[in-house]
Amino acid sequence: MAVSFSPILHLPHSLPSPPPLKSSRTKISATASLSSSSSSSSSASQMDLHNQGRQKFIEFPFVSAPHRDLMVNLLSTVEDRLGSHLLPCTLPLDVQHCQNESGSAQASLHIRSGLQSSQVDFILGSWLHCKLPTGGALNITSLSAYLNPSTDAPNFMIELIQSSPTSLVFILDLPPRKDPVLSPDYLQTFYENTQLDTHRQMLAKLPEVQPYVSSSLYLRSVLSPTVVMIQIGAQAGGPERMEEIVKNHIDPTAQEVLGIWLDHCARGERLVGEEEKAYMMKRDELIKKKTIEIDLGTNFPRLFGPEVTDRVLGAIQKVYNI
Image 1 (tube, helix red, strand yellow):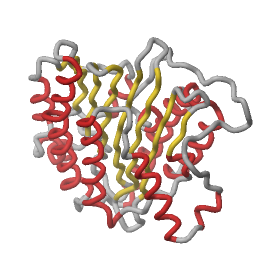
Image 2: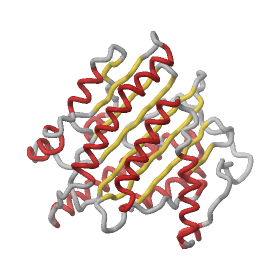
Image 3: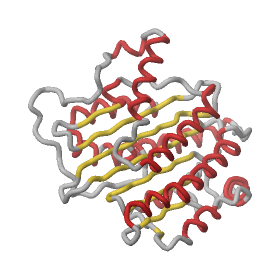
């Protein structure tokens, strides 16, 4: 569900709008619906909710096996390294997985907030499947990790946007949370010393790879100077070549960048003072609000209708604390 929850993608306006609802509730694909009282359920019930939603999320049913393996392995790595710092995902099942009335769009969402004692604010994974009016389908998978204002270390994000078996946009970054121009040590610590730009350079050598330039100036302003933002066209080699690129190039690159984030950002000791903490809190909040404004406010209603949008939006706002 990166379409809704990351500041990365702007969907084409040709996407289908949801059909008129036949009843007062849009159908959901989850097998059970949780009431608001679920937040006060027992620990066992919360873990059941977490396990059910996670199992559905990691199916990634509409992408290739290498693509699915990449996303599952990234999530598992984050949970293995940060598991003791994370709470279970307790979103209602009709927020963790939803679809529109016609079944032309489905989405899954997995969010785990960090403990109060942790530097981790939350991790957010999502996938979106949407049938296109021109035939085929749009599949988006993403994983983001946000740190809280106790540190100024960068966040982590990865997004794969596939509009056909031979066309893929790949975005991988540690978005900065300070201005590198005003803080040259920040640029050196997180981007130069870690040699992050080598990953973009290596992928750029593949003949199927072209730079991807977003039309959103806002997007381009919040990403780092070492962001991997590429478009992969494997028409000549077919779907098999695309799967090979994902398995042999995208996967190891993503794992290495995630490892850098876990070692130098999530588990680092870079704490900030009260004045800087107030700045970080304000900046983080502005980005979260802008994310919801751009994506949830525009694209999600067209895909899922107002009722599902309101339900998901309410859950996201609670996690974002806005």
